[in-house]
Image (tube, rainbow, N blue to C red; front, side, top):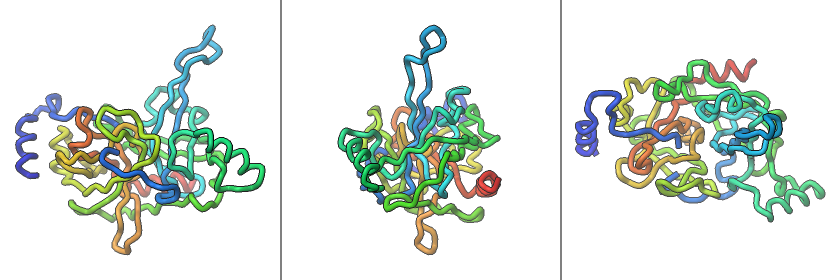
Length: 294
């Protein structure tokens, strides 16, 4: 791996503008998961108006999808770049969060079960979709500097009801770190192969923590502060479009799964053959606690 990396770095050159890997904010090589397997995984979806009739009535929309994680009954953790679509992208009224499911869309059977679930009080049949109340992007987020501080919080309009398929992910302490080689897992609805569209069912793949130093050089990044990398070189596994904002989880010393990272970006041309870059959650614990505490 070191030899391959060294060759890639040599080809990349030293100039930031001539970097080897173009970036894509976007699971390749993973396996589908079952409902409730990762109960904190959520689908964050936006609906942005792109055309209005007479400048008033919306007639065309653009749909946006990101991943996220439930960190308590009212708050979702995701990536800031998910809300880059101007003022509409930051408007919470354009966003909803879908929980307690592994499916990206609602099929006919899901819809029928939802109706009967409401009629007969079957919470496990209901579709759990909650409107966003607030979107809070990190004040230091900078998409022009390699998506620096790529982290955001979503407050839901109502608390998430307790259920069989819903649960919170534990957050790390500010001091915790995961050494290179630690096996973690990423979950989301990203493409199943390079160039493909989103997966209809959530996927999960194990990825080792990758050397931040080598990763930074591969992408021509000047700093890896508050970031981490996970993945492989030429293994056909990694994050892809649709995984943005999704949780990278690792086990702590006690054997509990905790959220180590937030999917930020990967290689645009070959996302499954290079490590992905993640926002390092432990670096933002004071900010998260401050926002939630307010």
